[in-house]
Image (cartoon, rainbow, N blue to C red; front, top):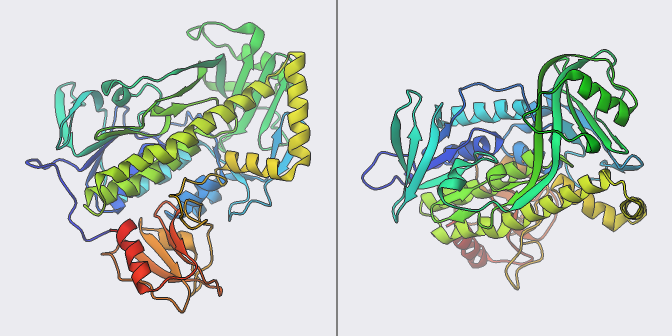
Length: 489
C-alpha cells in the first residue's frame, strides 16, 4: 500500500472509486484499488453470499498469472483440478505443456471459488462492501459522479465518487445509466443449465461433445455435483418454459451417448447466449469492465477470464490517476488496449461455437480444414492457443518503441531467488535491470527495483498488470529516470 493520500471528491468524504458488481471482475478491481491505497466502495444488489450456482468453470493461464501476481493462484490451484490438454471438435487435441507460462494447463474450478478468494483479499485490503444496494441511475460532472441507489431498507440514497466502474454484468445498470448501446445479437437460444449428481462419473475431467443437433457439456463442482449444459437445435422453446430433468438426460444421451445416471438436480434453468460489445469502455468518469462491456458465447471458457484481465488492466491506471501520478488521459488507454481484445474474444468464441455445431456440408468441410490446419501448422496452433489462454495477447506500442514494449512479461527469475509475479504483488511497477545498470530512485512504494537472475543486458520496466511499459538494451541513469518519470510518475 502506498503512503500517498488518495484523492476524494471535493467537499465530500466519499470514496475515490465506486465499483458496481461483486463478481470476479469487480472483486479483483476493488481489491487492487484498495491495496494501492485508493478508498473504494463496492455495491452489489444481491445479498451477501457466495452462490454455488456458477456459470464459469475455467481459469486460463493468463488469468492464473494475474492471480499469482496477487498471491492467490497457489491457493486456487490446491482447490481446482488441472486440465493439460484441450479437446476441440472431437478429434483435435491440443497439449498445453509447451505454454510459455508457469501455468501450463487450464484450472477447472467453479467461479464461486474464485469469488471467495477475491472477496477475502478485497475485504482484508479495506474495501467498503454495500450489499443489497441497487444502482438506479447516475449523473456525472467535472468533479465526480453521483450514483443513485436503492438501499437495503428500500429507501433512495446517493453515493458520490470521483470515478465509477460498472462491473455489473450483462444487464448492467451502469451501462444503461450512461446511455451506451450494447449492439450484437443472440447466437444460441434455449440452452439448459442443470446442477446434478451422476450415478456414473465420467472418466474425463471435462466432458463435451456435439452430435447432429445436440450438444452437451459436463464439469464437476468438486462437491459431488456436476454442471450440465445441454442444447438441442431442433427443440428450441421459450426461456420461461420449465426445465425437466428428463429433457436434460435426453439431450445428454444424444450428444454424449449416455446420461451418466443424472439425478437429484438441485437447480435447473434456461438461458440464451449473446454476442455483444459496447462501443466505448469509458464515458467521462464512468468505465465498464467484464460482461457489462462485452458478452459472448461460453465456447472456450473465456468470459470470466477476459473480465479478470479487464480489471487488471484498469485498476493500476485508476490508482495512478486518483493519486495524481498520471494524467486522466491514461484512462483512455484502457479502451485502446482492452476493446480490441474483447472484440477478438467475441469473434473467436463465436467461431468456435458455430464450428462445434456445424451441420451443413460447407460448414462441416470448413471445420475439417481448420482442424487439419491447427493440427499440422505449428504457428497457427500456437496463435489459437495463445488467444484462448490469454498468453498470446499484447498491447500496441508507440512508434519507435523497443520490440518488447506492449508484450506480456513472463514470470522470469530474479536475483535473490524471487520471481517477477512475486515482485508485482502490491500493485507496483517492477524495474528489472542488469547488474551493471542503475535502478533509479524509489517512487513512494510504487516501484520495486530488481536484477536479472541471469546475465541478461536489457533493462525492462513492467507495469503492475504484467505488461512491459518500457525497455532498452542499453540505458544510463538519465534514461532510466526519464522512463520512470514517464510511466511511474
